[in-house]
Image 1 (cartoon, rainbow, N blue to C red):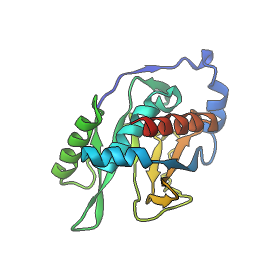
Image 2 (image 1 turned 45 degrees about the horizontal axis):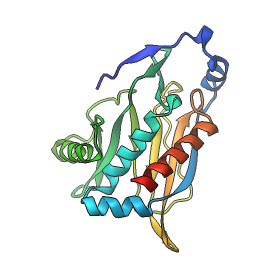
Image 3 (image 1 turned 90 degrees about the horizontal axis):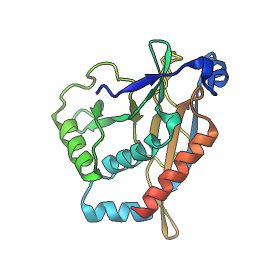
Length: 209
């Protein structure tokens, strides 16, 4: 995808100390699970006849791109800041019940993204097309379980700073439709404050859609 980035001068970067401390951690990523109210969003998506999964991926990516901390990565050992982050997601092959990992660049509208994601996912025959670039948010929805917590496999690469974003099976609570939602991020770049900013921005997006 090749999004543009700038290298960060860590000698003059306010987060340099925090970045280095967490970079040396045995497990430098942390995961937070919370709930989202998707009542309005789900209704509007159904009216537009859009895929819920692709629409959520688009919504999250729009909101996360607005928060600088979610666009930092390690590249060749350096800290870089991307101008934009695109998407990668798991997509289930109904016949084999195995998933493939699909890369799709962002689009200007949710309709254009949903169409591009659907076509790319259907056209891709391979389960894996090679190592993921660093300029993606990695999505792995799990719509079969309304989880309260989720963990992820760990390849042991401390400089893998790609956020992992998941959600479970949505459910009714009173008049609301609730979605369990999870974000795993690299603590060198992202703190609880930034997860909170994403949660607020995303909930506002879903409410106003």
